[in-house]
Figure 1 (cartoon, rainbow, N blue to C red):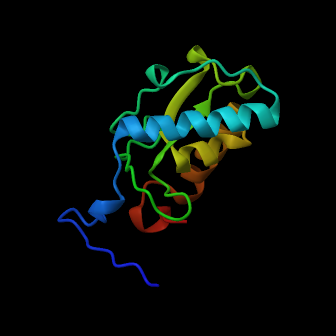
Figure 2: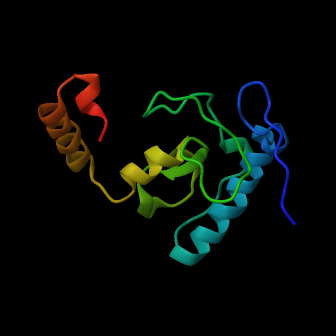
Figure 3: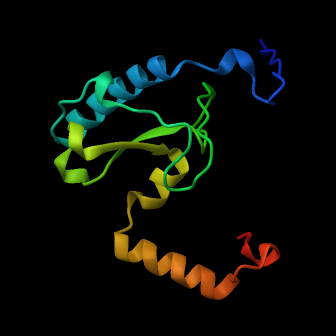
Length: 130
């Protein structure tokens, strides 16, 4: 059976959008599973999750779409210091893309990457698309 998708005026499938509150509950459930699997602390509640309108790292609007696979601008729960786990002062909500970018890199590696990307591509918009 093929699903029908109806676009809303802003280009997103309206029926695939869910509320921030519902999305926060989904993030909690996922974080709890991940904490058990990785044996890290877990003590957050939905009240600890603040989903901003814009990703603080990429300055792009966050979307809340329920679709197959991860959407790069959907919110993602980030552990600031991974080994501290999911505790209130160690989480932030950023985009999936930003979380994936910082997932395995240290702050030093991210700075090196950004610095060298600017050296290689400059500020020329034609040269900046990788």
